[in-house]
Amino acid sequence: MKFKPKPFILRILTPENFWVTFHPYIYHPMYVGRDFLDSPDLFNKPIIQHEKTHYIQQETTGRFLWLFKYFCSRKFRMGQEIAALIQELKFRSFERRSYYIMRFAASLASLDYFWCASFSKALTEIKYQAMLSGVEYPDI
Image (tube, rainbow, N blue to C red):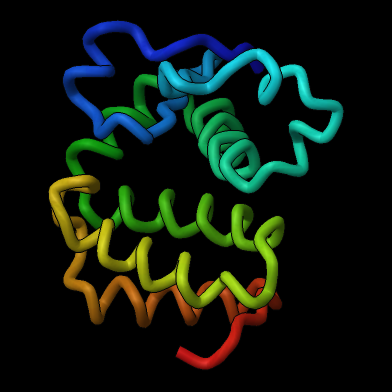
């Protein structure tokens, strides 16, 4: 995995705070500094776990096929994002997990992820996948 600042085209196409994985690179927002990337506990950071999941998904599927399916299939996109969120949640504090689950369900139901599901469907699926993965969270 190699980290790079988001190029101009990704800065235009994605929200400022979004990270983007396109194997073999993980593109980070412009505001992310070397102190974050050089941190000895970098791979304990929730966002890195999220992007690492996409990296592995692309490595397994093939990056171009993964991108094609990601942009053409709402179901595929939602599944890939929820899988990455579950890995991210494992590195978030228990007390904050519900907040991130709600925020992510809202994002999946918005332009951020091209409306891949309604809020209620996204929330139901996130909770189900969290349960299957043994990720606990405070009541929502």
